[in-house]
Image: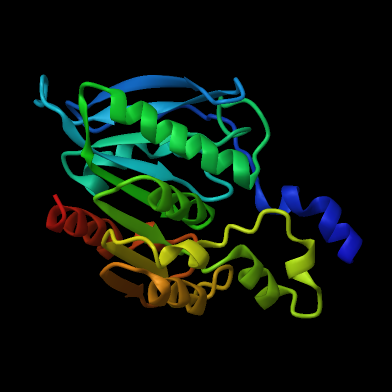
Length: 255
């Protein structure tokens, strides 16, 4: 079993999804296809969704990092409901959607930093008002980006303290710490991050149990707000209206 997990862990951690068709953004919003060359030349693809009526101004922006089985451009229709009048950058991980390459922790973090730097150079986006939002696996990317670059605030959905800790919860009889190549050790860097954070998790989450989210919140170096959504698990938080409302309100408190 240990040998199996060592060999197959990439396929268990990363579940790339193709583009099924990018939904239209909210009425009046603009959708721009984005292509970015990573440091090693790998082409990354996604979309930038912009709110209406903001021509000629530098916009606040949300950089979103999705879960391990998420094709993120599918979220373009929810930009306004979840984030208010902010630009939203939805860039697929390597191997996901139309992005090339193969996913891995080091590559995904490096790509996130390159994406931030690219967005900060744009004349229509304001890097002083960037927020990052990471969901599940994406929380591991978002936390490392927030540790490497200044962000206004951080939203974390179903986050974990480290992937090794989650692995030990599911496989307590295996030496997960020795086998894992992609560690996503968010708790190790969280103490150095001073940006405010909103941590959201479902009380019935069996994939990333709530205690892992709480441990990350406890390790955070800045102010933390928590939202526990009763009766929801890992993949159904969107169905509760409190989820999008809490994110929008949190962003409004940190404009």
